[in-house]
Amino acid sequence: MLLDIDNLSLTITANGLVNPILDTVSLSVDAGEVVGLVGESGSGKSTTARAVLRLYPHTAAVEGSITVGGTEVLSASRDELHRVRSSEAAMIHQDPRAALNPVRRIGDSLTERLVHVLGVSRSDAAAAGLELLAAVGIRQPEERMRQYPHELSGGMLQRVVIAAALTGQPKLLLADEATSALDVTTQAEVLAILRDLQVQRGLGVLLITHDLHLAAAYCDRVYVMYRGRIVEELRGNDLFHGAQHEYTRRLLSAVPAIGHLPNSESRAS
Ligand SMILES: Nc1ncnc2c1ncn2[C@@H]1O[C@H](COP(=O)(O)OP(=O)(O)OP(=O)(O)O)[C@@H](O)[C@H]1O
Image 1 (cartoon, helix red, strand yellow):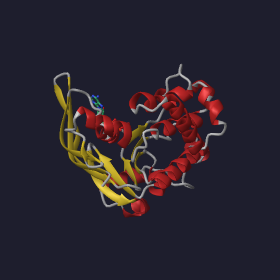
Image 2 (spheres, helix red, strand yellow):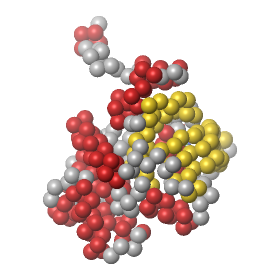
Image 3 (cartoon, helix red, strand yellow):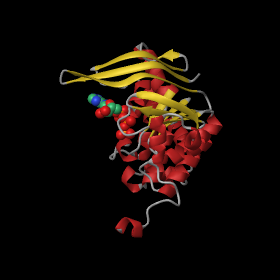
Image 4 (spheres, helix red, strand yellow):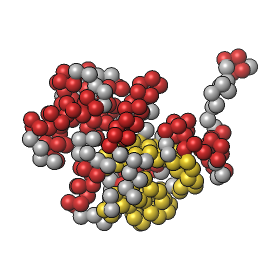
């Protein structure tokens, strides 16, 4: 198994109060598999994904196990953790503008990890950067490498962020609402690119999303999270009609079905 989270519990202490955030969370992602993690805001999805890279506040207390490619992340040495973060798993966030330094050229942001973390020469890193930009469907990559983030659209920037995440050739992608900030058409384009890359490279993807239609259509399996616990695991295809847990049904009933959106007349009445 590429990612195996087993009985992960996490509390964060703030102002003397111990806040339980995750409670015995278990989930797995195999190589070549797209796995969804859905649930309402604050249910613990991002905390789970960040824990995979051992990113949590120093006041956190953590129990359980997280293995990435067989390495136990929670007790990993500095070197092992560095390897996991630089070449085993990468995270993509919602806002590409926050992920890229606004005063650095795209090419510098893209090749940074290769040069400074993986010790690749600048010319090899530039060649790899160009290749990655082409792989995420960016035309005229040489020109883009010289541009600054404000010169690119949101969809283009998210492609750059995906390319940057792939520089260490990770096997696992943690996509935290990675397309939520994009308009519907751009979202579909970015998701299609992500799917192509996932298939070509046999990547495992943990896809965190609020969009249950997307989770159902895009994911092989979906975990449903509620108040820090996994309450249900379903095949993507079964999400809308196979849910057993009361919370999953409530979550699904809150999703407007296409064709059943309130029209302006009924809203006005
Ligand atoms: N650094 C922190 N200190 C204290 N509490 C935190 C911290 N990070 C997260 N939390 C709390 O942990 C809970 C889970 O947050 P998390 O961001 O993982 O949820 P989420 O399901 O990803 O929500 P969203 O969908 O809104 O991103 C929330 O109650 C949040 O307030």
